[in-house]
Image (cartoon, rainbow, N blue to C red; front, side, top):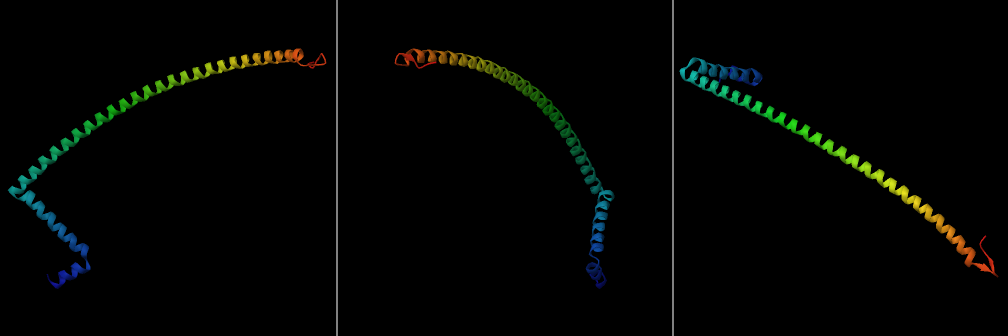
Length: 138
């Protein structure tokens, strides 16, 4: 390497790198477009690229179909879940209402029993609790 090339390499590394890259690209282009063997390689690369592209298109279509199927199944499962949730909610609400009715009835019975017991207690007080023959009850 001459002093001038060393100076260019040291002071301008991007220029030197660009020069090497350009030479490599030029050599590859010459090989692919200028030689019989290069044309065969280019043809094989093109064929392989086309096959790969076709495989990618097929894979993309398959994935799209699977995605649509999954989306459809998810929508169906969502609808089924919502239906079950609504039925369960209705059952729970009905059971709560029934329990409220039963509680109200039990409350009424308890009040009735309380009144009867209070009356019976007052009657017993008058009858059995006396002082010198007089009832202590009012």
